Image (cartoon, rainbow over all chains, first blue to last red):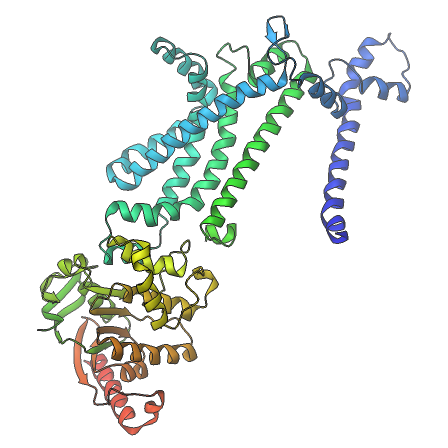
Length: 303
Length: 253
């Protein structure tokens, strides 16, 4: 217990405290321009006053942790989820996080289906390997911000608006790591085991199901984690050009127009917490599956 | 009828590399034949041709009276590789059950058979362990148990003990000999250890490289009942000397 405290808790807390201290210190010079602007010309501002002002502005350049926490607390209320609107916008951070989460999960699910199907095609067909793989890589060289409006415009006449185009934009980012990881994974099975399956006259499907798929899982799971984070980025970006009025991305845009830095940061924090929760819950799933498959630990799984 | 027979068997890889040239071979039921020779003499390739893992470019080969492909589809042989080749995510039992499952058996039906082969390789009680929980020698025994599980009359073994230390190897050689006597299977055994070949075999096929071929077949006069200390007898040392001479001759040609 004492070992755990001294070797884990103390160092982690120390680094956290140091980061917060640097944050508060940096806020003084960054926010001071506004303090001087608001003061009368050539007025002498004592340091203590400078500190109090730079740490409590309404629209600071760099919002401070206590301001962000207070803002998150204020906005993350359940009572506002369906009710209160201000200038036509719902205000609850929980509501907007849910909107972004829903397109993240849709995008991730689409990306998983597309990524896994493409990698199956690539691994089992030489023609697909030669013709599809270059396009998969090319697709990622185009900035998502450039392609997002086109996807929205192209999908609208087909009757897809709202969630679906956002999911597709999110998919565009999330399928890529999954194709790469799964293709590598499906090709990673031990040649001896492949021969072994052949000596038993296993069918192609049996070899896939009993050998290649389990061999691919240690590659698929990290790829899915990256894909999940990418899906969240895609979901936030998708809200920018779609004229969406809800979601963390849409809120970020609105607040940035009004230079409301504190709510912007509150939204960023909400996105970060969401990403963290998604990846952590996914890791738990991965660990449970690895245990079920008898791998000793992650190192074993990736060997 | 021979269990394995080959006439004028050749295999030339692209680039005119002659892995096997004009191999003639006839192995009767119940024989234990070792293939010994330096690296590159084609002994593994020969075993893989018998198993239909490589395609010959000339000559004929029959396995249990059929083409290698038919024999493979009929699951006429069990193959033991140099590495244990166990699926890491399956228990020992799960691994042994795998070929039986591919043949359409249910886990319940196979339970008795799995217990039997585990006993044969002295791994009873280890069925529910995962491969990483076993030592190298135990993993290789599990691999042999798996090859025995579906009771094919022919066993193909490609340097199965090559990666193990000598103490474990001696013990496994003894066990394999007992197993062979008890089951009366035909065994084709690739090795590059002279004592191992002489200790185990009824016949020793000496191979030489470039092009890969069988340069001499030596009948082993040792009695079927061989305790480990047979290796200190003059009869044993004579056969070993004959094998060594044949290997040297093959290299000089």
